[in-house]
Length: 357
Image (cartoon, one colour):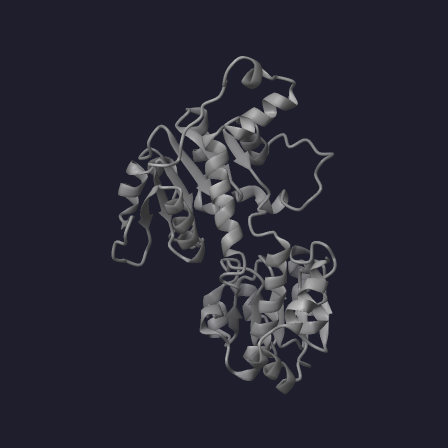
C-alpha cells in the first residue's frame, strides 16, 4: 500500500480532538515546501493537505529561496541550510518554519528567534527504527556479518567448508556506552538491556542512575565501553566530539556506532584509527560527506578523493546511506506531524515538545 494511502487512512482514524481541530481551522495560509524530494521519496505524498494554498518544490537553491517564500507564512524544509544571513532577509510574512525531521542544526535558531519566527521539528517520528539500526549494526559487526557476505559474494565458502574464518563475539555481558539520552538513546538502552548488556550513559543533563544504567562522564564512558553508540544532536559543542584525542581513550577492541549526525565524528581521525586497527568495528548511517553522496545517483562516477569511498573500503566498517529513519511509517509520521504542527500553530497551541525556538 502506498505511503499516501496509508497517510489518508491515518487521518481517517485520528482522534476526535484532531478531527475537531481540522474542522475548526481553514488552512489557507500560503505554505511553501522548499525541498520535497528529501521527504517524498516515492512521489506519493500529497502536500496539499498542509494548506489550500501550498506550493511545492522538489529542491531549492540558496539563490531561489527568498523569491520562492515571498508572501508565505509557513515554510517546510528538511535538512536544508537556513543561515542567519538568509533569515534576516526573510519577508515579514514568514511566521513558522517546519523542519520535517528531528535535527535542526541546519537552521540558525538565534536568527529565527530575533525575527519572531517559530521553528518546529519532529522529535520522535522514527525513534524505534533508528534505535533498531544502531542495534542492527552492533549485532552485525559482532558477527562480522559484512565480511561473511563479501566472502560469499567472492565465491569463498570457507566459513562453511573449513571453519569460521572471521571474529565472532557475544554482546551479552558487554558494556554499551550511549552518548545522548533522548528518545532514541532511551530506546537503545531498552533494547540493549534485553540483550543483557550493561549500560553507561553520557548526557549534558545530569541524571540519577537507574537499574542497570549508570550516568558517567564522557571520559569514563569512552574508557570502559565495549560498544559506543552516538545519539546526541549536532551543536557547536558536540561537533567532532569523537576525535583523535577521544578516540585514544577507547578500548582497542571497541565498536563505534553513529546513527545521529555525521559531524559528531571527525572523519579523518576515525579513518586514521581504523587504519591503525584501533577498533573491532565501525557502523555509520551518517557521515560528514553525505550531503553530496546520499540520495544522489553517482554510480557512473569514480569517487577518487572521497572519504566515503575510503570508509567503504574497510572490511570492518558498515556504511549505510542515512536510511535509519527511512521507513514508510516514518514518512507518514513526517507528513502527519508537519501538518499537525502547522494546524496547531494557527490555532495557537503548538505542542511544546515540537517547538525548538
